[in-house]
Amino acid sequence: MSHSVARPLAGLVTIAVIAGVVAFAANMFRGGLSETTVPVTVLSTRAGLVMNPDARVQMRGVQVGKVDSIEERSDGQAALHLAMDTSHLQSIPANVLVDIASTTVFGAKFVELIPPADPSLQNLGAGQVLQAKHVTVEINTVFQQLTSVLSKIEPDKLSETLGAIASAFNGRGAQFGRTLSDTDAFLAKLDPSLPNLSHDIAVTPAVAGAYADAAPDLTKIADSAATVSQTVVDEQQNLDALLISSIGLADIGNEVVGGNRAAVTDVLSLLVPTTDLADRYHEALTCALEGMVPFIKAPPAPVPGFLISVGFPFPPDRYRYPHDLPKVAATGGPHCADMGLPNPPFESRPPFLVADVGTNPWKYGNQGILLNSDALKQFLYGPIDGPPRNAAQIGQPG
Image 1 (tube, rainbow, N blue to C red):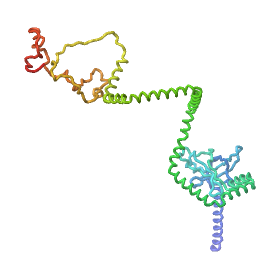
Image 2 (cartoon, helix red, strand yellow; image 1 turned 180 degrees about the horizontal axis):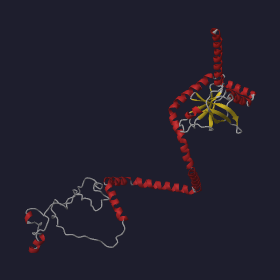
Image 3 (cartoon, rainbow, N blue to C red; image 1 turned 30 degrees about the horizontal axis):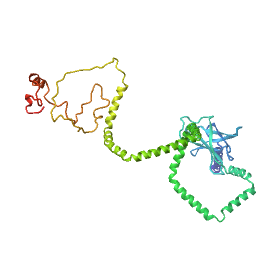
Image 4 (cartoon, rainbow, N blue to C red; image 1 turned 90 degrees about the vertical axis):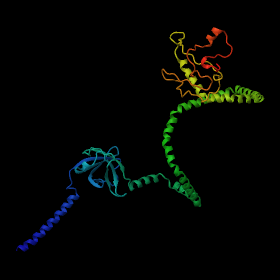
């Protein structure tokens, strides 16, 4: 008895399980077990021909919602009302990008959310409005645009145009191929210069802007040039007279220079040592002229007159022959920069340059008071013939 009851009971349980699985699957397919959703609106220039309600909304290949309804607005845009799953909103930034895409040209459309390069810290929220940036081109749209273009073309004119093109290319395949080959060679030569061309194109706006800024000045220059040209036309007689006078002056100059060619050459030759010396000491000459500038620009003295400081130092040694004869043997060139000239420091003086010019005012000698001086001898004995002498310098001249 128990065996006869168990078999029908097992059959009923099996049928109930199968029915529950089918019902569960159907409910899942209809979205009956979906999570709580929030509304989000997407505005687009068009929704696409195959965009239907219940279309998928996905991000990185994962479905995060669906299209609840599609509304056509008065401004011509399409408003897609999305039902977004709340469980996915925390991973979608508020500045997410939106594209309306399709798997194939003929496939159904879906809304694709694209993460931005710089995502915001806020997440996508309920009631937010997004703007679609791109809508996939459909084959229907291509056909529609092609039909609109073809409707504007007259068949007879199109036939004549195609016939003319066919006649132009008939028998000229070799020439056309040669043209393509030459074009390819030209582009190959042009390819290394593309960076320079890109740079030229990039700086062209700046150059054009500079010319635009200088346009008023260029216009003034053109107007002034026109005025100058008109002045030349008006004064052409005087200009002719000036040119004729210049020709006569040039002829006289040729006669003068030609007749005195030897003398001019000699003068220039004689000036060479002087000019070479001036060129060698040009730094010293410049230094001297620059040193005079403070005296020229200095204000006048508050009290007129001169301030003289007089001292009585011990006299240097007397003149001696032939050691103190003057000489022209100074060498070494200018020393202006070495001595801190022409602007010496405050409360300082440049050092004295001792050169080979004969006597030396700072040489060591018999300085001091000479008791056996020439003046004493002459005072006691009268005029003395011959060079002066003293006890310490017996037998030495001077």
